[in-house]
Length: 196
Image (cartoon, rainbow, N blue to C red; front, side):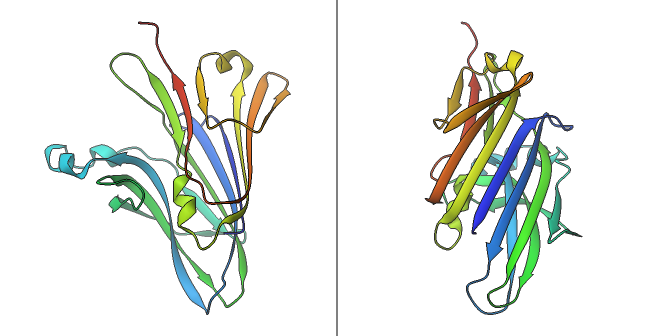
């Protein structure tokens, strides 16, 4: 992966709209690569006690374009998570990209995701970045933009990791993260902690 640009804002059927623009380069011979985007985690010990599809009933409206052309996607359940012990991804949307030797391709994914919460009123949203560390070498350039309305910013009491910079435009504030030559070791996380 050479470059990765992620744009997140409120919107879409599930609450958050995400657009990811990525540039890949094949450093080996002709190949077909399966690429996947994960949605949430679960403990595999729980899966037998839960109704079928409980972790996969949301429709993220996942769409992919490779060099401007739409490609078919395949949802898969319970894919092993190489980064987190004993956890699997609840849902992974996969697609295939064919590369010739030395070829570069642009891949654009758009989808919606929901946040989460618990019984005490805590709300959270996270965007999984850690899977970017699985690619060959480091990501040469990684940029993330999270756009919130100014009136909603105070609701999110914790935003991590530390942002690189912010930009105010009209009624919105954008939080930016910028990295060079990185293998991500954290996810983007927002938390609202209720008054107890």
